[in-house]
Amino acid sequence: MTAPMQGYSTIGTNNKETAEIFYDGVLSQLNPIKLLANDRITMWLSKEDKSVILAISIPYDGEVATTGNGAMKAIALGSHEEVDQMYAKAIKSGAKDDGEPGLRTETFYGAYVYDLDGNKLCFFNFGT
Image 1 (cartoon, rainbow, N blue to C red):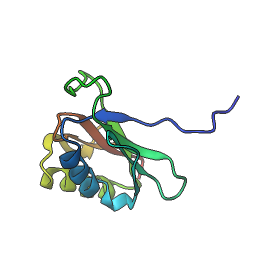
Image 2: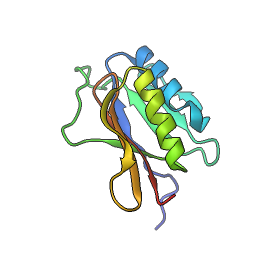
Image 3: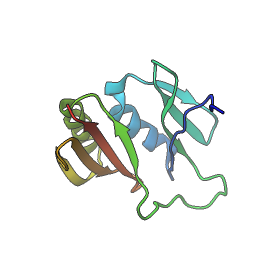
Image 4: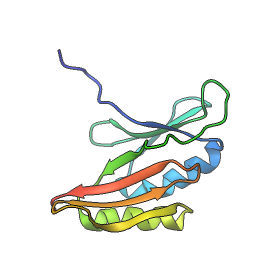
């Protein structure tokens, strides 16, 4: 059986407005479609296939959003240069560095940051 929808990642935020500004800037090079799903959730979709790149949400249970130890959202990009650009946008927008862009294996090029709520992100490219 084939699932008609791709999976996606949602990360929590305690300040949706600030998080939207941060991700509008960081994800801008992907030229996404921004979808304000409701007053709690915002999603950024790929224009090519309408798949969800990332979603942010105020926690449904009304509790404070916290980061998960070991949890990370990884965003695949088309080249090392695109990784460098997205990393630079994130840092300029207030993200905390957790690993500058570089080769981690022979074919994996990645960069790591924490967003404004402490969520860990990886921007990566395989093999180009």
